Length: 388
Image (cartoon, rainbow, N blue to C red; front, side, top):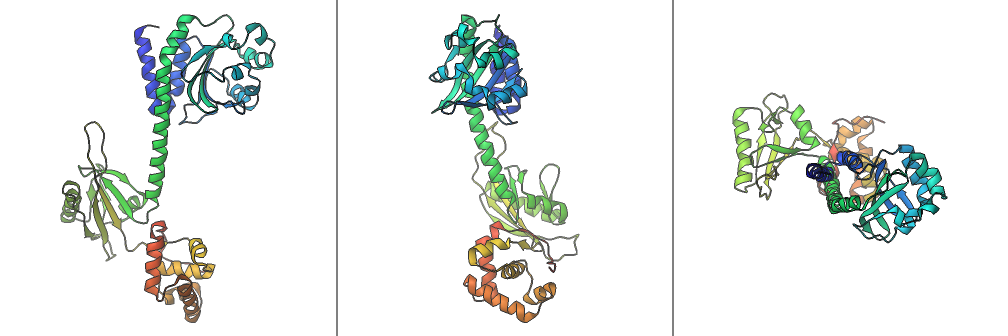
């Protein structure tokens, strides 16, 4: 392998670390470089003599030049009869070995492993290495060749030079995947907020918009984002004021709030916008990062709370939970009675039970309790309750 091909192969290793869809591309190129009839990155559990090559779009467990059904059969059965597996159990992390050193060739041809799994694919020789190892688990690389293609000492040396890069790439991939999973979890939590949230960088451009903020941007005349991710409001003066609010939070660390009037709407109540500074020290080439969180609340969108939470927490009956959530959404007891088709006295009796079970004494205390205890779990709801 010449120097350019070697450098390109190294580049593919690290590209795959942050772009998992490139693992098969790298394995194909590795197969070309070493004349492989099949190359597999897979997970082995020596305790159970089981293995898996099954993968998805974000995993480095991949196989190329191997029929998917054959890979599946290895997972289901043939890993248990792989005579190379047990003899490589103590192979250290980062080390390579050729299979003729693991099991005598003259004995291999008598085994079920060879006759039923290797031979149908024209596999005979393999070079094996453990890229990562922890307790009885190992991430294993296997490069298969035909009987007429034993591995030379020079090829073993060349692949050994690649192994440290492969190990680092797998570790980078693991850390990157963990970060992505945490990021996805955080994003999901932010999308559950019952208020709009937009994160802006130091230039005043949005770098994150939660679901509620997207809804407000589409449906509200008081706030939206333009194509460049900069905020717009109902008129030019208000837009300048909001951008100044965001700028002061970013540059001076000053949090503040303002109302956003909806000039093109029949609804009179304005949105509320609160800018909160975030600690941010952007570095060159490190990309944009949030420096300001802008919270946007629409008072005309009621909250909807899962009544099961109130049942579990306070022992409210389903009927009582429906009343409590209706009050949280802004309905009065008399409006609720009309909507449900029941008498005011029935609602008063239910409300009395709700107050007693929640340890509150008046409706305002109940709403405060629900907002402080469950407000972050609420989601925007419809304004009208329908009769059962």
